[in-house]
Figure 1: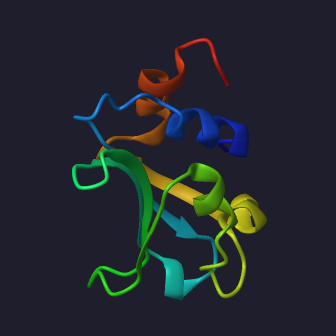
Figure 2: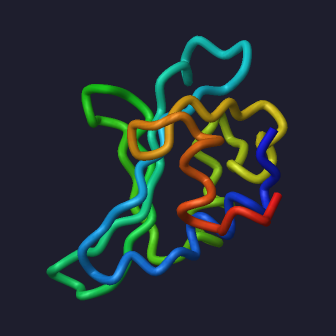
Amino acid sequence: MITFDVMKKIMAFDIQRKYCVEILFSIDDNDKFSHCWMGKSFDDETECDVYWFGLTPDGKNAFAYPTFEELSSAKVFDKKSLFEIWDSVILMEIDGCNPMERICNYIGENDD
């Protein structure tokens, strides 16, 4: 299980205006949120990092926020926030890779 503090560290990674973080996840025992995405990318229009959710494959339930704090407190999961449901979040991939193998790229090999 990846702690919420580790997720904060991943999202704090400096993407240097050219990288992105993309995380595929699901909510345990919730078919509605069985394949969701969240991430961080650089927005050329605003010239700022943007934090986002994609809650359905069709892109109709997409949300963007200027900070990770706003993303994690947005009540987009049946009136609950990512922070509130974190214990039910299952990370399936980070940047298309096994989450445990990819985390060290964002937070270092010695961190939990």
